[in-house]
Image (cartoon, rainbow, N blue to C red; front, top):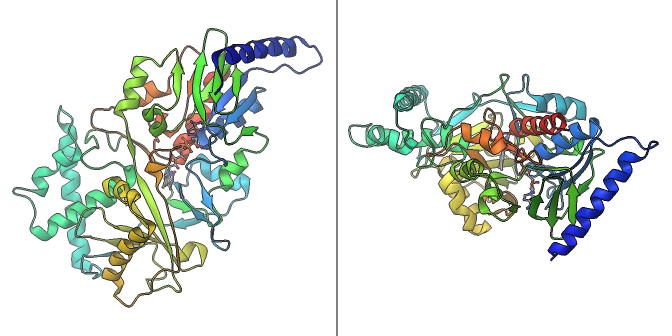
Length: 454
Ligand SMILES: Cc1cc2nc3c(=O)[nH]c(=O)nc-3n(C[C@H](O)[C@H](O)[C@H](O)COP(=O)(O)OP(=O)(O)OC[C@H]3O[C@@H](n4cnc5c(N)ncnc54)[C@H](O)[C@@H]3O)c2cc1C
């Protein structure tokens, strides 16, 4: 553990070093020394912009890899799989589309319209079933819009309780409404309906142009952004300290001093309080950290000996007995040419199964798939499972607007402190939270703030 005396010594050394560099006529002037905490998309986007503008930048990253919540696992040599983000959501005008082109990364489009929905018994919905679902979705949306007009905020669960319970739908339709709540809201925002604010849960924006994913892995984007960026891997930041002259970041291995620090820690990590800020964060920022929600979305990739599902469909949906249990599957054979299915679990159930063994998770997934495709389907030959809520450097998948929060809190989260500590990361983006492009924009915004201040 590095002590306070060591901090002062290193910090003093840095100031001397800085004045020396600035004073030497033959050395190009460094605009600012910046330490960035976190080598996710926000940190890397900021690093690139700051370096281009003549700053000296060090990115400090706890993991032994870059990318954060973008992570392409190479466990299957012939089929890279994204454990975190998969899609460019809305390809038109999205900066990630441009980056993909610059990086020469292949993308493949998928469509929610290319889907089959199966009822609890595993029967694909016929036309009448599809029409009923559309009507229920309209009913649900009407109910949510009405609740958004009300003065007092409430959870989505409270706002839909009448619809779901007394005077609500027929018993079969309740299951379908629960399915819609999970597939259209919980899976998208990561929060449970009991946690999500009905007024603000969907207060975000999107790009047009459909969705596209990376058959060779999303990792191409952070790898591209990281070119020429110095990243200290395997250094977990414990403390961020500042005064009127400088800032110092303490990791388990070193002290890094700078003119300013950009924090891109995930909201889950900020909530957990494992990183100490001294002299302390302002009240409005602490309130935002505590009130905004950190959601869960987990993935389970199952690899089979052969494809036994509709081979040309993108999405397979299932209306389970219990809300949120294996409702959404993606046919990855379309993407990678291998017999792989990806199952998603979000919010409460997504969090619950993180404590289960891999074996139990796969067995539960297979129960759902067998309800749809029959007992004869083979067991998977391999699997890959994520546990984002238990990941100490994420502590959740992405942020959501929880009951008790409001969108202005994201602006509070983004605000610099004492013009020395700056903030980025998906949770700081009021318009595009929970996405890669939202995190990217936040990094660009924070880099702009640092440059404007120098
Ligand atoms: C399962 C899943 C699916 C998703 N799907 C999509 C999708 O399809 N499309 C989309 O647009 N978005 C998706 N997202 C969201 C997207 O991945 C994130 O919004 C985005 O990657 C966040 O980037 P960031 O830079 O804000 O944070 P991060 O990528 O989390 O970067 C923060 C970095 O800080 C590091 N860190 C944490 N603690 C410390 C510490 N103490 N010291 C030093 N470093 C530390 C972390 O290791 C990490 O590298 C998904 C996320 C998940 C989890």
